[in-house]
Amino acid sequence: MNAERAEIRRYLAAGDMPAEQLDAWIDRALALADQTVRPRSLYGVYRCETDGDGATVGGVYFAGKSLARNLRPCGRVFLLAVTLGAEADLLLRRESGRGSAYAAVMQAVLTERIERACDGAEEELRKTLSPGEILRPRFSLGYGDTLLSDQKAFFGLLPVTKRLGVSLSESFLMTPMKSVTAFVGVAQTERKDV
Image 1 (cartoon, rainbow, N blue to C red):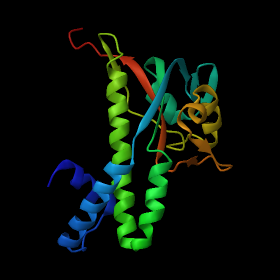
Image 2 (image 1 turned 90 degrees about the vertical axis):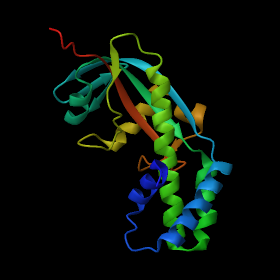
Image 3 (image 1 turned 180 degrees about the horizontal axis):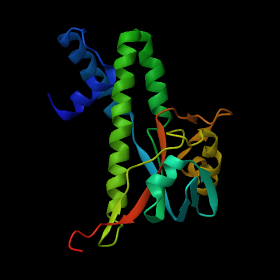
């Protein structure tokens, strides 16, 4: 089984589903996703300072000790936004009519695709680094002790709506649904010869 299918199965946690049926659904969902979805991304780089309770990025304070820990070694941070676009939401709605089990497979395929798109965007960020710099793990608002409501400030710094067409609901959830925003800190590699 290839890594793509293994990841999709992991998202599904489909322990007792017949393998033949599951494989057929995965094949269909992958083919439709590849025909329909075109991932897009956007990033900006900002100065970053942390204290024990949060991080100031581009002059805006984001609360969260977990975010501060992640960005502590960073003087700069990328704000990253990635989306599969409205096409992914339309595809999921359309294909959900085939039944809830198949809808779960389509959901898992689109989740794998957004994660893959985030990984690809991160590779592009990596190409901009200077020698001796590394990227910290992606960190999204709503994770750990950070506030999902801080998405509004994130969208204020990075023109996500204007450039990618991703908007925030009143409860700070993104539309299209298969969209991700994240902080990706830039740190210096640790020298092992000291």
